[in-house]
Length: 573
Image (cartoon, rainbow, N blue to C red):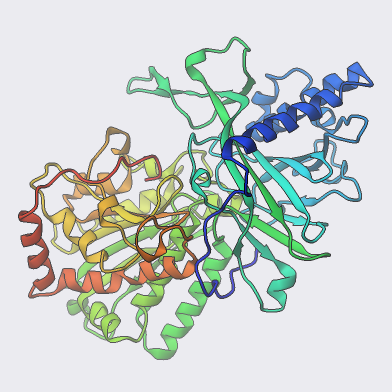
């Protein structure tokens, strides 16, 4: 399993900066020019070899997009990607699935970085060395899809300490990213971790995110009745520009390029988009929670919600004061919480980690909350996708948070069974709140999306204001719009079908805050866990029989001009 973080850094880590005298445009020009110069140089001694080398990067892209994509580039193959010019570059140095059964590092030089993705949640597909210290990387698509490349997690060895290595991931698919606003990836050093010095730390300089020269044909979205709608952006066949494809469906890939200096010789390091939280980590953590509960008095029960398509257990926790009678427990309000429907949104698991720790703790607030409510918690809705290193989808190759209207028990069992659990409270007044925890790749801060039919609805705005007692929560970023594109999401379906006013997603930025003392700094696991812990006082205020905070907030909202609120939702929900 991949390493888990040690203690987070004592002080929050700043965003990336550029070298003095270097602009964002300079980095883009250098990246594109270096790629072009490498390919041109490789054609000089041998036209045939040069032709093969000329499709090296496109071959790598094809490997990430699938066999149908590879067919769009004649001559694109593993052997083509290995073809090297007179200086030995470009050359393929890593292939996660070599076609001929050879070593994944068959083309590597003695001095090449040794990339690896043979561990849980990793997703590097191919690496092509384009110079002595520069590498083009291609991510694997989500299983059974041709896209959804955003999350990354891979292992690196054989690096020289302190040398600036330029790594460029060339098949990112979102048109914008927090990497363009200074976000830095994370690095874990096994050597430093073994000495207990450091866990995951931010790394990378001169980071840039831009549209590159490679394209794909986006699949047409389907309207009701099976007619193709306008092009989507979820991934499609790889292509090169100018191939005669329908221009309306041709979308560019994006490059994330960065310079990383590895800290030690003879070390093994991991690089990730966000703090990893694997299925194995969750299982170990829940074992610890159960053991603690048995020692201190039973407050949590763990069961299997269902088996996933891949045969893994989807855990369901019930947290309450079980010392009461069955009648007393049955009279309590119910709060349903879930996370990690999108596997690459690992920050959601760190919020959930803080939440579970807080609601099971032996504190006065936690004890009071367990006497007042029953919490039903699904910490990881998509174990299959998490294990596979997917960013967005499950085993079936679909976004599980777009399947809530009528989920299939066979294809998306976790959504089917969680919805059935929620509907078991239909016709009663027990269900108080539903919240699904997410990560956001294009916005800063932590905020909620709720649901309102009109600006006169007050109830959906109350719980976000209670969460705003947490200094990391941004009330101005909350939104209550219900867009057509979100009609099939959990929060909207639960709101509509169960008439639940308190139905939300909680979104945490992969980057950090843009306000207050944390502005310009990254979130660490400390801030994410603190946000999860903030649910305890917020829920206590919501179920307070006197409704003191709720009435105060309602009065405050009524005196303010209301709008549907917030900035546009983006696509993370």
